[in-house]
Length: 400
Image (cartoon, rainbow, N blue to C red; front, side):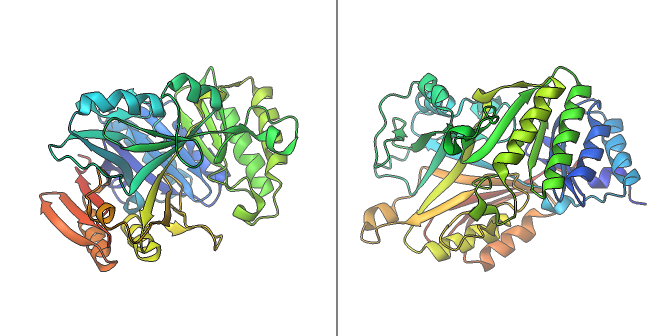
């Protein structure tokens, strides 16, 4: 039998593992055994498995106990799928732009001047100094969807753009801050008031104990499993997030014989029956948007670079992590005559943290998919896609 430590990898500041599981119910069984372990940061339950993350200083016995619980349930680890995607913004004055992004995302300060999602669901934002002035619009921006009252509270001022949702920091880096809606408002259905549609349909619940958390997670897995819907269940200290995945509450997106609104109502009744408290203001969705002259070539690069898969709808350009653990990427046509904008280096790029035993192979695969290696150093590679959008691949330290 493999040593339990072989299940774990250092990825972006966490000691992480992925355990394959055949269903939401099987994943929930594992999570139920782990909730009281020391140093636990997050648990993400999917129809294909569970991601477990511990703090860097978590005791080795906690990792061993998690591995042992997985083995008892017949679940094998697959560390090669672990990764974490972050956004890097370069600025001539990082201190000046940081408050803008903190308000837009409702993030918290993290070490090194970074901004982090307190729920550890959405990508970290790292703001780095750059002496280079780049006056034209980026070809990369963020979409952030939050409840309307939370957008008002962010206080970013009057929005611009075709849809009236665009905001820019002082350097011109853009975010489309999109107001969400209640699920019930979209279909005139009652009994789903806990659910916010922020591109995903999402319900966030506070719990008072790990026992209550376990009950909610188990009930949600059972209801979604019975309905045949691949619900995302994210477990955090004192919180359970139930999430459809982007657009998956729509029938044409999931392609299943599932009435998601009916399922959402059943999940809400179960959560309230357990005594969980809805926290609609926590709902948030973040995705990365690329403008591309050749959408197919750029999209293909990023799918290979991140191991993503395309949206099932032929008219949609999205690609997503098959486990829906990292943010979606979306591509739209760029005016090919805008040569100056196409030549300018973006002020925003992406960075993916990978296990140290995976990173070099991923770099090779990315180059095969049309990527160009710009520079490399020990455990770090900077690449560009066919149109100059950049990705940094970082090999994180192994768990010892």
